[in-house]
Image (cartoon, rainbow, N blue to C red; front, top):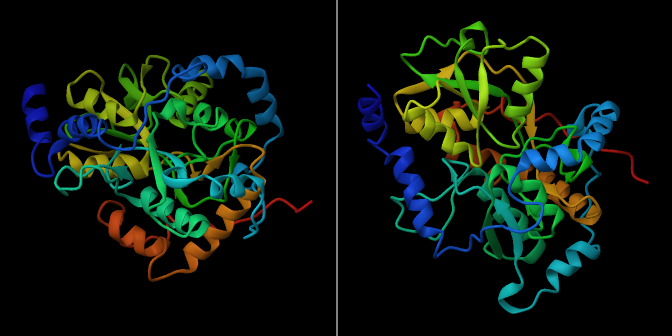
Length: 345
């Protein structure tokens, strides 16, 4: 049964496994640079080390998607430092995903193995065009889910644009832009599975999540509160969310919990799996930057205002190109509400 399901999943677009192999090969030639060094690797270890800070931030936090600065087009120290980079180094350095279909991925059938595509990638090009005058003035760095915050804090990237949910724990460590996408956690499982959604049918089931993701923290909290069956096994975590789908295909887990927007793209790649039940959270993606990069945060927020107004080449056009096939033609449920900002000081 497992072998048949895996073979079925490798048809059509090329399969997740095929994409993963291609991504691994092209990474040698692409601009993606693996991150290493102190504090990077085990997202849970980092979380444990700052647990007191996280708990305090969560106590004081309300509506994290509104904890951002008002828009501005002015250059400050952070932006000027980016502009002052010389020669080939005069690029915006951005942490992205290279494995999320239609968000940030390398299409093995495009013939352009060194180029990334997707909804997040379109936004990165727009930011680079505004700040540096060239949409291609970008150095992409592929970053696992659990390394997004360390990469920003260590100064390895200027920002992360990688389906990153704004939440109370994270705003203690990094600054976020206003939301640019709305989604929610959902369950992904084989079509033949008895799992019906985020409910008691997950009892005695093995769930996979990405380490350092909001999915894992939600499952952990819900299991402690009795909202998730105590017999549900949530111990399987992986560096990259795509790895969960591969585990599911191999029969090593029974379900995946991740953002519905990502899960829908994965279901489009593999006809043997589907979303089970409705989203059980409401979450917003934001661009993440260093805590003290106020001018860059304000600039990105201004870019997002203009991006959403640009009907020809902005947010809607990118949604239509990359996401309408998996999330539906009506983008209203995915478009975040009008942004709200902290008072200027």
